[in-house]
Image (spheres, one colour):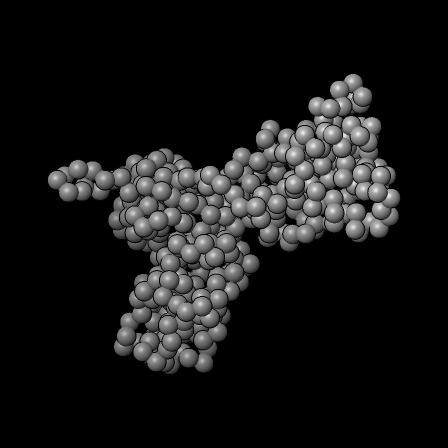
Length: 380
């Protein structure tokens, strides 16, 4: 993945009541890769729509740099912004903004008119892409809310934009049509489209690769993670640790199978980077100090649990041992982990021969180097 979008120290000031300046955005800095899907979330008045307007060249930042591709849009004049916007950005709004007296096909062609030349065949293909090829001659009043939103998506797609900006695209839809629109966006994401979507709905936000949380015009990192998120992070850290072992040893004795697809892995590592567990550059993932310490603890708990089940409880079913060890790796306290390690005599390997990281309880019982370099290759 290659960086496609960069904001550096972007602020947007408006003049409020009594001439007092109001900061809609306050020193925003972030990047997005090409093909990434980002959900922009936060309470009303947090700056979500202001950020989307600046990204879509409908407005310009008061200070800071906004770079899309090779273009610094903060340096463009109004006419240049309009041209760049028509060639680069596709918009999807909550209110649809369809022309009432134009049919679906004509509404899509209208976007072509402002870009270059209307092309009926291309407009029809765009409607077919969102499942409305048979509704091309219908007026907006003859379409359901979900169908109108899909026409709006077709209009956004017809000029083949490099980035799609969606402002509450499911906000006016019922549950059934919400799913249809999200599935269309997921399909566009799978094609490699870059999508930035404003939403207040946590369920909708989970469809994205990562979430950008705004409060009072600033990016904030969520202070608490759910138990489910923590468990998924632990599983990814475990997989990355074992991948490092495999690279360092020419093939680790034991490698747990992955439970995540490539897209899920990318979404999780991006979220983990936000909370300081890893750093991500394309498919190159490296532990931070905090991430490595947490991964070591997870692996240590898991492998000690495997040794306990086999050596003490005489369990022999690998599938059961693996399942129970996965449960224990998330719940054992450091104190209990050390007590198990001491009880087992500070074993050096799990039953499969993979090394068990040392703990404080091990002291001089075991010693040996541990490597720190991690490189994660894209799943084949």
